[in-house]
Amino acid sequence: MIVFDLLCAAGHPFEGWFGSADEFASQQTRQLVQCPSCGSAEVRRIPSAARINLGAQEPARPAKAPERTPEMEGKDPFAIAQMLYSRMLDELLTKTEDVGKDFPAEARRIYYQEAPARAIRGQATDQEHDELVEEGVPVARLPGLPTGKLN
Ligand SMILES: [Zn+2]
Image (cartoon, rainbow, N blue to C red; front, top):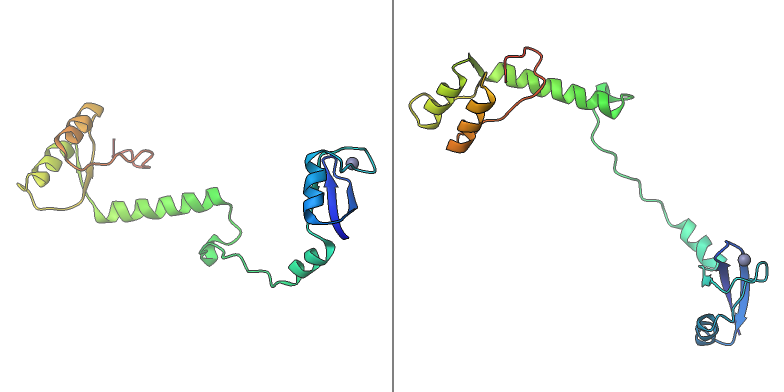
């Protein structure tokens, strides 16, 4: 005889004694294994208590936390995203040349190697932007710039 720890669909744990694992499977299929508390035949095996104790002794693997800098500590994800976005913006503003309304023309000149290759920013209308994209000029829209100088 072997003993199985069982659980019914309503969550009642109970023990069942069977001649073999096959016998349990057979009885379970024919819905002969029923919960003593509620009579449910929807029953499944759960790991035995011994097995559960064994599992609990395994050392817990520490979850790898995402890289955080001290200044991000205690901030909510939205604040962190804002911080990263404003850093990216700083980077962008210091490393690009502001060509203002000449942006579409200047972007083309750079693309066709008529002007020195460099990162520029400036203004473009929706139509100008679409035309640049159609020509294959690599441009990116940057919504929400504080200066309002881009698009
Ligand atoms: Zn039950």
